[in-house]
Length: 427
Ligand SMILES: Nc1ncnc2c1ncn2[C@@H]1O[C@H](COP(=O)(O)OP(=O)(O)OP(=O)(O)O)[C@@H](O)[C@H]1O
Ligand SMILES: [Mg+2]
Image (cartoon, rainbow, N blue to C red; front, side, top):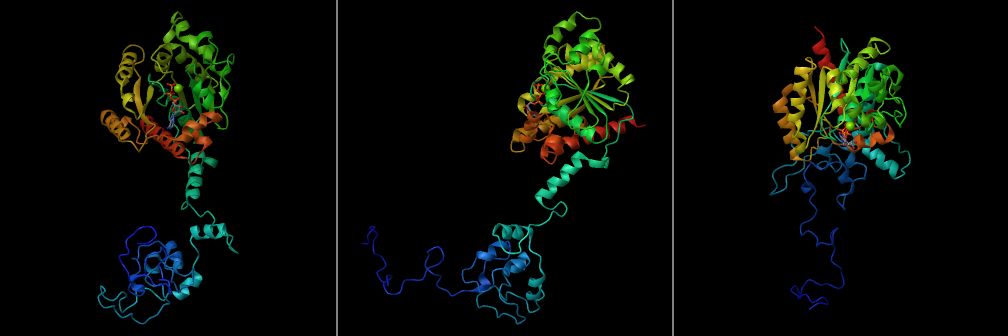
């Protein structure tokens, strides 16, 4: 018995004078001598070769210089002589005719991979320098290129402008489905790509005003004054922070009482329609898109928005409950069309907060697509932390983090909306 109580089952093993040579992990040595051709197969990436076989006889920079498939097989000095096939092996490792040209000269001329250069810099090696961004093939390059596409400097990627003004109501009486987020980001994307955009915040929470960096504390002239006191939109409209061609009519907490106050007012359902028409016939005649962000209810405010527009955009969150209540929304739209606004229709459905990790998101998306067909935009907005962070900085995600997934998704959704609208309005 040894000290730890294991049986001495191999009496001949210990040899006190000459310690048994050991492999790198302390295992007993392989009984057979080193067999170079039996290195692991060729799909190893280049980098592991640097520190793999302890007995490597080649300089450490050499193996990583080779193309991945050839690197391991030709790790020894290049030689044109055929390597005799080892008995019992699958045959000669190299064909008689060498496939590759000799390796040695290539080694000298090779430019290191970006990842090697970064590692070299991290190791403080003399002469090491970081790789430069060359096109879209590095993660940073991809993000930078995406940001340029989103921000569209110089207007090189302007969307087609609608032949006539489009007024969209963003509505869903279910709360928290992405109405405001979609309004703010689609508006910003459209404005960055050449359109003149007016956002009307019709929600007493004032989230769209916050998301656009527009002042909306109590007492600021707002949509409340427009709806209840006939103040022109031109007197309350504000320029949005950091996005050219984007303006906003803010909502303040005063609007919370408007649902009730409107009840007794003449033409209570068409107050917003008249205000928008007056603005667009005058100082806002250059506006291409009006986007109205509705509160999570089907009250008089939402009704005003539906009377004022021809298009409803419904954001649907990719969650099970999101589908409940959709029937009621569609019924309301149908009622408005039948009684107040015959031009009204659901033009666009946008799937929001899509989480690719869940099966449910897919099921909801498929369900919605099979039911609504082409009305659903092909672009789906992913659930993304950057999207939810942006309002905290008074910005859309499109300006807050232009290269992010959420920003690119909103850009593509806005492009689809613009292209579809142009197709529809162009004879
Ligand atoms: N794609 C997304 N990824 C992550 N978070 C999101 C995304 N879209 C929206 N959110 C977050 O979800 C919450 C609800 O979004 P939003 O305010 O746009 O919904 P809403 O329908 O306007 O809500 P309400 O009905 O209260 O007006 C917000 O906190 C927002 O930041
Ligand atoms: Mg909202």
